[in-house]
Image (cartoon, rainbow, N blue to C red):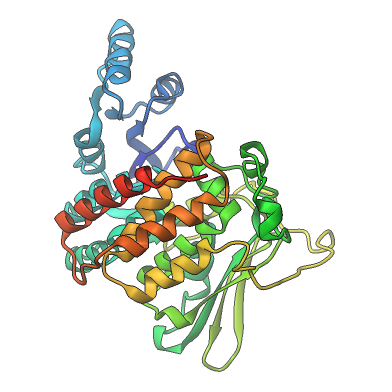
Length: 386
């Protein structure tokens, strides 16, 4: 049976890899909608290759440019723009599954709209659950919609839990590569450059998530996301640095046996699992050769050098809108670092200062989440640094 899929963020790292999985399984996977921010050249190529019915370009001017190009070719693809356009793609009536692979808070409303339309979600946008976790979980439960994790770590946990009972979980252990600055002191990190921060040792990703990996904020966001995906307490979620990125995460059960999911660092596998769940299918990806794996090592994260991870645990403990504030502040501080307006260690400084200014809303609705997100972004923009 053909499965119809739309992809939010089809021109990004996850989106392009997802389309490779579609190409490898074009007899059973069909693309309905695609979206980009401004990368209309690549989106046009994707339209030619996958024939979606609708596409969204977030930037309005770029959307008009693409629409003119497509009309000259006689294309009937609908071109929409902005947040309303994202929601239109997300809720297209033909969709069986929506892959949310956009970066940042922008994924929350389209994801909620798709859930409310009864569409299953393959979730590669961790900020959606970080900012609006309770809203998303409640909506998915009400609609009987599946949330299928695409992050390699959460997909690993998801696989380890297959066939096991929730009440048998003792804890989960999320693995982290440690990023490009593993082992460096806080003093050494004061002089980090943008180019250095963008050189991840194991994964090829977009700029924002690569910087988050360098600060360990990515692990912090994953901790918060795991709480919602797997209905866990804060003290049931641990992080361990595993530089080889072979073990993608682990689950320890109440009998103290531990299950781990291992594989090469390749996002195609978690994407494929989400697309075909509950089935597994064969592929031609590189298998893990244990004869070439010389060692698997583990160490505690350095919370003094990488305080963003600790901030995430703090936000999770506080609850309410605090995780939304942390996420919003981090998006702005990372953008400021990418624009070379601030230093690397200003990222956790800004995040902490914005969190300290926030008055928590315990049980937020969507309007509360959106208002708090906007407030935190403005606060993060205004923080002065040396």
